[in-house]
Image 1 (cartoon, rainbow, N blue to C red):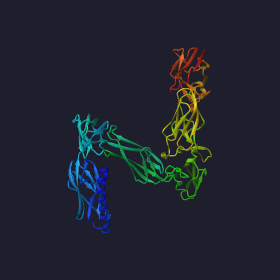
Image 2 (tube, rainbow, N blue to C red):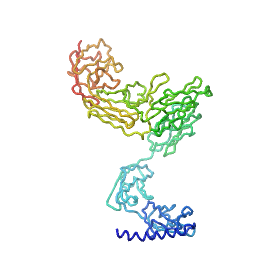
Image 3 (cartoon, helix red, strand yellow):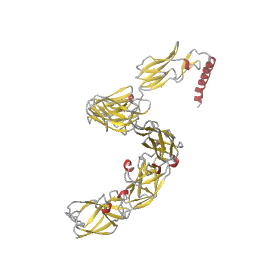
Image 4 (tube, rainbow, N blue to C red):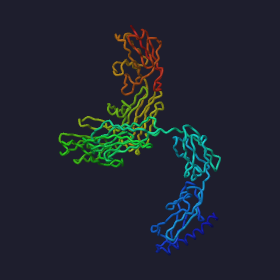
Amino acid sequence: MIRFFRNFIPIVISFASFFAIFSCNKSSTELTAIFFTNVKDGEVTIGVGNDFRLKYILEPYGIEDLVKLEWTSSKKNVATVRNGRVTAVEPGTTIITASSGSVSASVKVNVEILDVNDFSLPETVFAYVGRQVRVDVDILDPEDATAEGIEWSVTNEGIATCEIKDGQLYITAHADGSTVLTGKASGSDKIRSCTIQTATYIPVQTISVTMDSLSISAGKDVPVKLHVLPENASMKDVTWSVSPEDMATFDESAMLLRLGLKTGIVTLTATSVEDQVSGSAKLTVTDAVGLFYPQDAPDGFICPDGSFEAYPKSIKMVPCFPSSVSAQPVTWKSYDTSRATVDQDGVVTAVGHGAVLIEAVAGKVTIRKVVRSFKESMIDWRAYTPESRNWDDYVKSKHVELTTIGMAGNTAFWVIDKAAWYKTASGKEDIDKEFYPKVYGRYTLPQVSSTTSNIKVTVLDQMPRLVECKPSKVASGDVTVDMGIGKAITMKMEARVKTISFVESLNNDESCVTIANGGTHTFSKSRDGDNSGLGFDHVFYANYSDKYDNQHLASRRVILDCSPKKHNFGLYDEYLLWNSKSSPEPGTYKFTFRSHPDGFDPGTISFTFIIIE
């Protein structure tokens, strides 16, 4: 500490004198001196490939904005300089000078290769024959060293060679094959290796872009297909461009050309990144008919209270009518003013929470569009039956709200905001498949808590949320799903098998026979006179309740064992083949669970078939 203050006091005195000189000459604007403040003894040492910013002050004080310095390097092959930033190129010594008029200051810059103590390499480096790639060498110690501080070698230089350029390591491939790259740290005994994999480059020959139609009305989304040949081309990545740019945008993730409201001919072009081969498709865009969102709110999302900052409170809808009525006045209507209102200029303003149908009428032409108003405090999650695990298909089916989940095996349910349902023009209710906030940053990961460990509940990483339930054995309990925004939902869940159904036709629930666990059912060998000779795949289902209910996935297929086994009693896993040529012999047959495809163990389940003539 004493040594520190002995060194520090002269510095303080020096700077105090320095600033005293500045204050005496403060009124002068003519440069008299340049001082480097981060250089000791007039020189600095930099590792190859690194930068060093020279800091300086000018005398008199306060003229920095009035003076432009010229920077030079005596040996640009050693180090370059730009606006005081020195870049080390190769080992050696150079003089860096800052000057203005007759006033100058210089610093000696020593460039050297810094010893490397530790580093890491990727597992594999891939290179095409005749091409060069940079290897990502991660210098761990010291961080300002470069790959030049490592001794490099390649096992088979007939396949690839390595070289250092500007402190970076590069691999050049010479032939197809595989070899090993090895580096030895100059400052330690650390040795790292990785595989070099090389292959002959196969260029792209042709690119074709196709769309589902040659002409379409404005405002639509057009599916796009891309074909890059040959199929085994090495680099098939492409860039996309639209011309004119103001007519459409291209959504590469969805492979959709999203048209604006302008008419004309739009061209979509795909160009290979590496080979610069292009392919295009043209589309004629005609007058649009419909109601559209403005460009600054392309999803029709609004928010009444700012709880979703990304959504505006109001949006002005864009009506497009046929030319026959385009000059007539437009009348506007909201089908639910508790959620959003619309004025006679087509401005929709958020009021509450939920999807709402907006209507515009000109003459005898009516156009409609759903607008989504989101209010965080009113989000009301509910659980609904899982007729389909595909959201687009699900919204077309009927929806039943659930408060309990009964299962005879794995099942699932949708978590949907109740406000996704809206009033249609006919007075009925429909579901808006886009009604969920898309500001993903507002969501935390859903949290699931359960009072039973025998039912595993998982919220899938998608929007809307689909919740999977996988029981391991007979169990019951409460499960709470907290979506991270809006209220959490708590469901009563139970897993069990109460009955077994023998289903003769998957399209007709009435054709099944349902038997309680431990029960008995009697069949006629002829199956009521069926002598068609046709085979039927009769399927066994385990049911949660008293009846077969596959629609809500409360019934699940199971695999059974039969005793005694008879040659003409065709039990194949969960299928029972029964027809005039292979119907079972008269007798008593006992069925028991062999396994459950879902991994669910419902305990001992059995029933009896009695076959009579």
